[in-house]
Image (cartoon, rainbow, N blue to C red; front, side, top):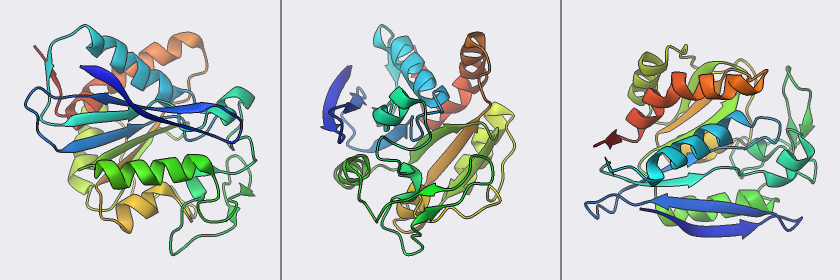
Length: 226
């Protein structure tokens, strides 16, 4: 069963949806999948929505309740920008020990990280993680074509690399101060995988990316179709 579990509004009246795919065993353990941290990276939302569409009429098993945020940054999505509508890089806005007001990125240029947890999107995700208490988290980004991880997630990352054929890296080569991975994975010890997909250059690329990553995402969720 797929249902709306919650939603939160950003500063511009856009809603961030939290969906829940309930398991059949009533197991209380949860996991969390997140897309759309950056508004110019639509691949994650496509993968998660495609997965939801595939499951809505299917019979499937998973030992987890699967929570999904298809798009964390709707204002950035509308503007097609990495930052949200306030010009803040949401993946550098978390109240971590290494927080920096500047988000450094050699590929896209530096952005503001605001002040710790200044954004409603950040606050919503913090509250949901604290409420759901996920056993593992998958955050889907795009462009770098690698798998990264934070916290006690190396074995999960190795499995995802094997399932997808994507290379596993220990870090992405530049500082990620104030990141969600640091906040949830390192500081709270939640196993967290950051999946960086290939860039979809054309519309048909989205479907190809989903197909090459479907097995990896389903296995991450311990999900099988009957």
